[in-house]
Length: 66
Image (cartoon, rainbow, N blue to C red; front, side, top):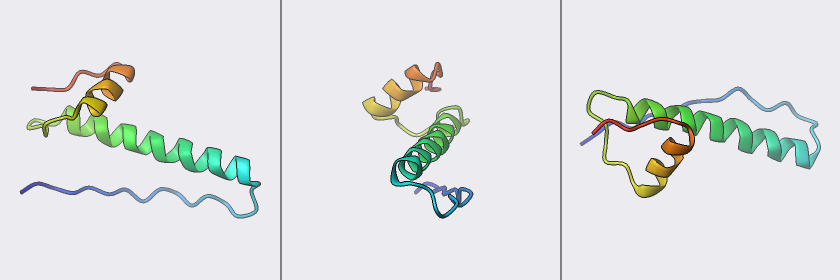
């Protein structure tokens, strides 16, 4: 039981150098993951959070609901 959420991000433009491509890929993916983690943590009935998620939420300045 539960809900799976996915998000489609805007495409990364072609023709970028490898380093810029990787920076954009990682940066945009991590930002979207952080946003989804915060949404899950602040939901009315949040899922149990593993230690890595709790640590990341703390880095983002967010406290998970319990």
